[in-house]
Image 1 (tube, one colour):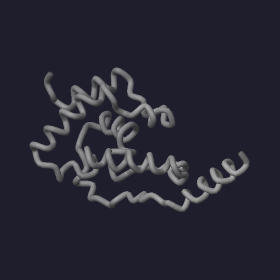
Image 2 (image 1 turned 180 degrees about the vertical axis):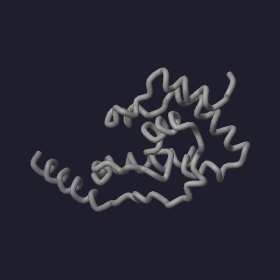
Image 3 (image 1 turned 120 degrees about the vertical axis):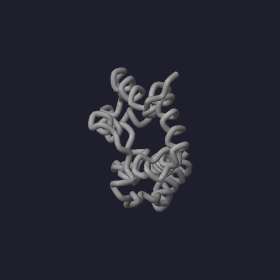
Image 4 (image 1 turned 180 degrees about the horizontal axis):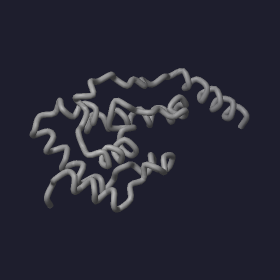
Length: 139
């Protein structure tokens, strides 16, 4: 039993040397999504930590294996939608992304695992409705 505990501790220490990329690529403000202030406020509070180049990396993003999960969420989030580079999308891509926002804002975003550590990111029903209306998507 002592060997198992010792091995586990050694492994936990060793994985701390596997670092993640916490780069927030610099992008021109002109490329950022344009929305009314009340919508931007919600996006910045609830979405930007995974869907922008303005991620505020928490302290536990330096602790493996949590860092790996956080890094994966950010990479996936940016790949799907990056508010910081919105103007680089074509009109067709923007339309598709707005439909995605419309669908996911009620179904799965923000992630429960994110809200668990960032209560302020939890969207109210009114905020969800406001975002859906802003997208201009019709059912």
